[in-house]
Structure formats: C-alpha cells, structure tokens
Length: 165
Figure 1 (cartoon, rainbow, N blue to C red):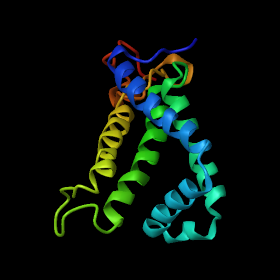
Figure 2: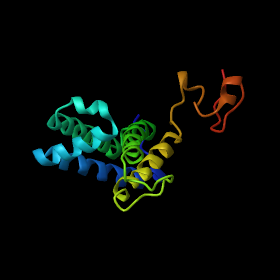
Figure 3: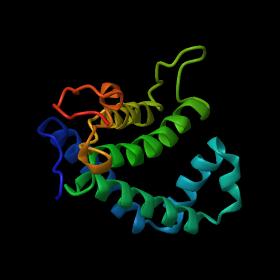
Figure 4: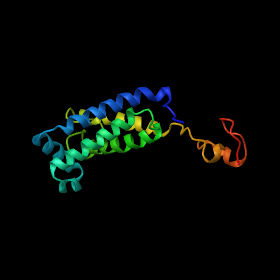
C-alpha cells in the first residue's frame, strides 16, 4: 500500500520540489553561454568537473535537478528517500557556497551580496536533513517492529503498539 507523505512534509516538499524542478527544466534549455557559466562556477568549486564538457555538465546537472524535484513532488516517493536526494543535492550546493571565493565574508559564514543566491541553499539542506528524520512508515520484517523504536527489538511494545520478536 502506498504511504502518502505526512501533512507536515507536504509544504516543504512542494516548495523545494517545484523550485528545483523549475531550475532543472530551465537549465535543460540553457544555451552555450549559460552552460559555460554554470560549468565554470562548478569547476572552480569542484575541480574534477573541469574534465566534463560544459554542455554535458549542464545536461547532467539539469537531469539531476529534474529527478530530485520530481522525487520531492511525487507523493509515492517516501519522504526519507526524497530527503536523501535533497540532502545530497543541497549539500553540493552548499559546498559551492563554501568553496567559491567571494561568496562569504572572510573568516565568517555570513554571505556577501554575491553569495546570497547560494547561501539560500542552506534552507534546502535543512529541509533535506529534516526529511531524513521523518518516520519511515515501515514495520520491517513480518510487520513486527518499526525501525524507529529499538525497544521493539527487545521483546517489548513500541510507541506504535508493535510487539517485539
């Protein structure tokens, strides 16, 4: 049976998913100049990316954004799984902010004016980490325990009334 997201997760999933999906669809249609700009910025933060041609990099990035945004918007994707995708993606974006010169003030994490567009990605990282803390909704093997409650494994009842093994 499909487990729908908890009501508390719907708004952040919709907001972050729509934002990331839109970015991916926009990047998918980007021209050569935009591809070179995005590739240049990413390569400055992550030098291994310089090996990829700019057009290939932007296609891969756009596909990643479309996949992450779609996972967040799809109600059949468990919140924790969507959280893994969002956390990984946002972690890379926060890495850009931390690695690129001029994005934050010297000796501080506070953004410069140029760094504000990247600093906001910390919110996406926070949402992703929050989704990772969501209950899994799974009862595990034979429906006998829930993964959140270690007492289930010791033969006692858990917070959901499951009996242990």
